Each structure stands twice: as C-alpha cells, then as structure tokens.
Length: 67
Length: 468
Image 1 (cartoon, rainbow over the protein chains, first blue to last red):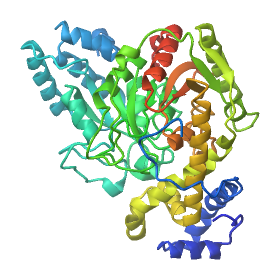
Image 2 (image 1 turned 120 degrees about the vertical axis):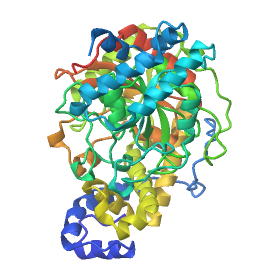
Image 3 (image 1 turned 90 degrees about the vertical axis):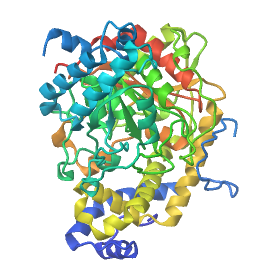
Image 4 (image 1 turned 120 degrees about the horizontal axis):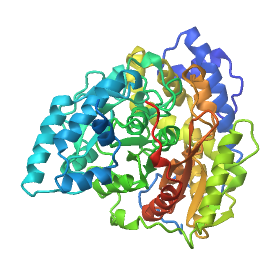
C-alpha cells in the first residue's frame, strides 16, 4: 500500500481480489477514500530511520522498561 | 423510582460494599434499584443489549444469603455490574454488537467474567458497544447505539459505549470495557467516568471476542478511581488460558490509593499532545492545562519530555489493528459481508489491503516507539495528556472517515502496552466532559492509580452526575 496515493479503482479491485474480496464498483468507489488516507499514512512508516537490527517483534507481555 | 433508589444507584462500589458487608443494605434491594432504573432510563440511553433481570435477582438473593450467614467474599460481593457484550457469558447471548454473532451463546465464561462472579458481583446484563469494538456508532450494525448521558445528542465514545453511558448514568456500578486503541479511556473521558487500560498481559483476554491480538486489552470502567482499583484487583493475574497473560505478581491496588503525589515526576510530550493543530480542540487543551497545574500544586513535578516517534503512532496502530482484524474476520467478510455494518465492513476490508511489508514495518516502528517511551520512563513516573483530542461529537457528524481521521491520544499506549487511565478533569463550555490521561511504567498500575486517585479526590468531579 505504501506508494499508492490516489489509487485507481481498477488497482483497488486488484488488491481486493488478491485478498479474496469480491467488491462491486460502488463498493470500491466507497472504499477508495479510506484506502487513500491509510496509504498516505502507511507510506510515512517507511520514512522512519530504523536499524537493520530493529526487528518486527511479536509483542511480549513481559515488558522490560530498560530494554 | 424513589429518591432512595436513585441514591442507591449513585453509591460507589466502595460505599455500597461497606453497607452490604455491615448488612445495612441488601444485595436484593440494591439490585432491584438498578433494574428499576434501567427499565426507566435505558429506553433513551440504550446502553444495554441484554438485561438479565431474573438471573440478577437470583444472584442477589444468593449473595444476600451468603452475607447473612457470614460468608462475605469481599468488596464486590453483591455489587451490580455489567459487561461489554464481547465478554463471553455462559448461556447468555454475546453478540459483539454484530449480526455476525447475533445468535451466539457461549458455552463458557470469559476468565474475567468468572473472576468477577467468584468475587460475588451481580451481573445485570450485557452492554452496547461499537460493532466488533471498532469504528463509531453505526446504525447499520443492527444493535442499539448507546447515547451520552451528559447530552443525548452526542456519542458516549467507543467502542465501550454502553459501558461509559451505563456507569455514568448509574445503570451499573462498574463495567469491563475492552481497548485496542482507546475503547476504555475514550468513553470514560466522554462520559466523565474512570477507565483503566492495564498493562498488556495484566488482565486475561480469554473468552473476549478479539479485534487485534497484539493490541487488545481488558480493563475496568467505574465512577471512581477507588472502584477501578477494586475491580482490577478481582480480574488481574495470570491465566493459563491466555497465551499473552503475564506471570508478574499482582500487588494490592487499593493499598496504593494514597492521596499524595509529592515527589512524582510527570512528563508531558507537548510536541504531540498539545500540538498547534486544527484537529486538536483548544478548549480541551486548556482544561487539561489546568489539570496539570493542579497536579503541580499537589506536589508533582511536571516536566516536558520528547518522544519523537509518537508522530508515527497514528500510522502504525491502524495498520496492525486492521491487518489482525482482517485475519480474524476474513472468512466471514468473504462469504457473508452483508452481516457486517457498513462502518466495520469498510474498515475490515481496508485491513485486507495492507501488504505484509506494511504490517511488518508497522511492528518495527512500534518497537521504536516502545523504546523511546522506555527511555523517557527512566526519567519520569508518569506521562500526562488529554485523553481525547476532541470532545464527544454529535451523532450527525460521525462517519467512517471522521472516525479514522481524529488524532488518537490513546492509541500510543496500546502500541507500548503501558498502563493508562482516564480520570475526569472538567467540562467544556457545552457541558461535555473532558478527561486527563495518565500513563505509567509497565505493571506499575499502583502509581497510575495513586496519581489519578489523588487528582480525583482533589477536584471531586465524582460529585457531579449527568442530568438523566
């Protein structure tokens, strides 16, 4: 989703079908503003400077404030 | 309803508990008062999905008999409570406010449900909520939309909407909400009650309909901080049925309720929570500024702190939440999408469209946010902010996009797992409530409760009930 600001309805249909969702044209048009909003937000996550060592951890209940 | 019954429904859990223990009040009399009040007021508040009149009266009679024979269980014995309708209750319909689960009757209690029952509480019923604990009030979900008792034209917040409305209006003495991005603290703030999201892993989620496994929390919603501590005591602790449950020891929460914040350091990340942004309500900030001054006058040291990665919390949290929600609901979304309300269906579908890279990156950024909070928590005891960036909107101005766009001041603590509480701190010029959010170190609920208790005892907003 990262680079998809202003996605076309056809592109959105492709993404939805890949996820197993069969959406009508009207449903895709209705979904597009929300998709575009989140796509813009999500792209910012890839601007964050993270080290190669920064993992995508699964959250642990044993939260260590010193970590 | 008699004056006496209204007064009974406005007792705190602590006050009622003392009367019950000393046999000056019967659980039967107390429960009957609540059931009468629900019958009289809930047609306009719509906070309940299911009222369990007969079952509650039977439980009250049982509690009365136990207390009379000297088997007093503790401060929740005989106390009428209600649960958000995603807590499983054996033999009682549990819907998550969705047609998808409209006829679902669990065969087992959630761990929290059974712990509250073991503590002797009386279950009055199951409370309204936003469908599957997401989004806003959606008239297409097929279930009642709870209203804000301070102004019926406004939403009570969500997703634990019925919990906020019912506790504020005196339709139950306490409730459990669930929270993935602010669903306990949000309605607490909007309804002028107390809501605590405990540390991730502190309270079992077994038997609670999930929204997002790595963000979901369960916690109490009550009229006072003291009552929140009492309810937390009953539900906290390790549960082998919940893989994310922590084995950390459970302290005595009510013992931490000392009216003193002298020596505490409270950090305020002004760059985020007090930003000069048109999407943050100025009057809300002004009221919370006064609350911070109050904390300072009470002896706390209030300092500014910086958490730069907070700016990414609003992007990270929805990616994780909606991706996980889609994973849980995918089969139903593909086969019977019409069973979902419009708002939730749209947002769950959006969750299907994030890439795996988006999800992984959101989790990596989450780790960065957690690390920066950990660094700040080495210098401060608490982090303070407004609970909500805006007052509760009226029903007409809520739609799926406005719900997504409002800046979340609560979501960061779902990402970090830190305990966070909302305590009432004032009202705006329209008479709508505003909450102060205090977040603490992991498993340091005692400090969070102590600061909130000290503040609440000083400002005494618990003396003001909504005009229902």
